[in-house]
Length: 416
Image: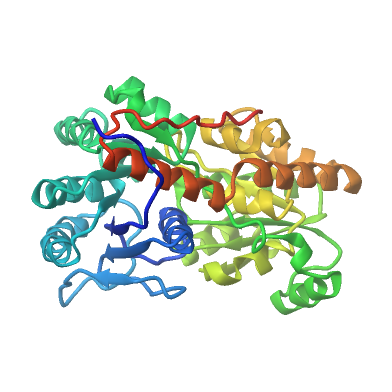
């Protein structure tokens, strides 16, 4: 068996079967991992769907497309079937050309493609697990739990979960899920949490004058506390419950306004806000480019993260925390992992409970909100920076290439 040696510079082929880059969720993780690996001196090539935009000079190669479906798709979609086939064929040609040291497959489709490439090239596969495939399909109402296709996809997910030489997970909860539900040996699982760049996402980058001017530019009221939300506008992200919670609060108080940033279904949620009679309390921005997100978050007093999924990551929380924003969330495993006892939690997954939690945040004295926000930012510096994760990723690469069956990682436990 080979000995674990000092890391060398690696040629990494990342498989990203998604419309990279599209300014949300898993795309941010893919981007930031590639950026930090390049900063550490490694060569990173990303293969993605033909849709999406290039960003930050990252080397993105794109699979073949078709004359239709050049819109951004979010979550599960039947279009992904033929896109995955086309990307898988392109991946074979690209892998034979680049001769990578490591195949780094994001999402389950990337894990499956990566397993085929690993067999062809001999390069080990690292599977980047960002949440349960079947749970995501349930969240998006793409499958029902009692259907034949659910059982089929669940069986496939279990097989893919065992294909990687090692597996990164975006949360400790994800690591536990892989072991308990899918039977993956713990020695192959490495919690590699979503992170944030605290220099980019810093409240100290924006003066009070800058913030006041930007508020005026956005048309935000100067005499109200600004709530901020960024992310996909979908039911499973809790957006419906969030707007319903605002309706309940509106019957009692008039000291808040929501800056709602995200896509798709902007018009649907405009209409929902209107039907709930909270449209005058919400400013919709549509999609916000990731490069400018910190500026938008800087206008906030309180952040909202009402995601309902138990298995997916929730990286927006880390951006909020890095901006020192007190954060209201449902008590999911991932939100508790990221926020610890500094989070402001709804006691149950309902609009009423969410309204109560938001009210708690609104009623906090300014000094208390600042203390809570600063505690969250300190938590980011201690536990959730991309530099820390980059070193961990490379350690696993080195261990797998050396033939080490269980890379000797002391994964730091994050305190509540």
